[in-house]
Amino acid sequence: MSFPVKSQKQADGRFKKWGFIQEENKYLRVILLEDEETVHNAFFDRGFKEVDDEN
Image (tube, rainbow, N blue to C red; front, side, top):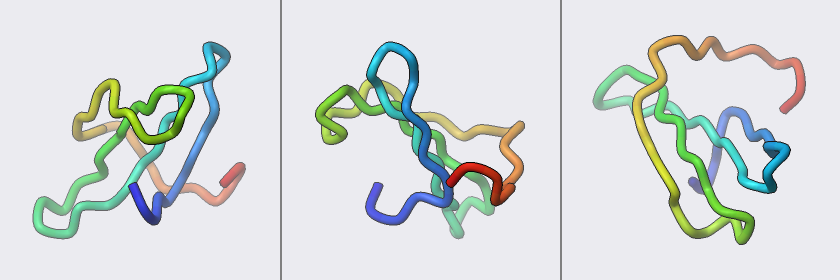
């Protein structure tokens, strides 16, 4: 994800990144492996609220 609205490193070394998909009007959460390139999982995150707290 080139321009995430939020990024967070997990305790296991993986990264969570959220991006807004305008065509769907939803936020997509992408879980990346430690290399920050390999996608482990991706799904629309219905509970995500964009907050500028730790980005």
